[in-house]
Image (cartoon, rainbow, N blue to C red):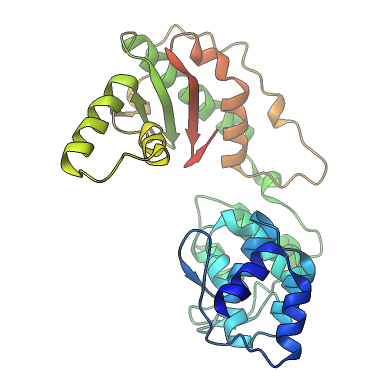
Length: 316
């Protein structure tokens, strides 16, 4: 039955689930196997399936309605710990999960603030999360006051409490973004000039570090892994993951790569223009800026036809 239930949730089979609950089927303490092989609660599976598979809002509502508060709270707050899960959290909120539901005496807003998840904090505030709600470590507002390097956390909470909601974009320092983008482009440009004898599958950049993987480094790593792990790295998906694993070639400190002949006077900053209801974060803006100006650094960088750029652990 667990396999049938899992399949129904993933494929959006409303009729099966309605029959399951009509016949007295229960969800509490059930662990189902997600497509990635991990064990998850039905609540986690239904939210993920709604976003990434063939699930739908009706099934999310069915699962939420038939789940205990403890399971809802645990799953909801687990999702809130990562900015990448905003779509799943929104799906559960739309299905009726209370935004300030508590698990282990913490709310999702407290967890998201503690984990420094700016987009998640904004989403939860938009759905009415209370910055002043007390939890195990105090309030989310108190935690936000301690995040001095990023004023958006406190600024957003205060703005929602005052009835004048603001988003992460309202706290963006455009000059700082331009400066960091220039450093990134300069570093990749210089890296390419210094490694003309290599052809690269991927360049990865994350804050102050640049890493890469070249054809030569990939072949050497693949050979070593196949020798060390005789049954591994034979399947195409394993080989592809290794190929686009930045770091096999080298690591570099971006701030040590300032010397350049790169002309940065013609950088395209159109990505900084505000959008309707703009809630983009600094990381998202930097990502857009680097991709928009990719041709500048590719002039000096030898790349493969399937070249990719990885920014803040997301590959493009």
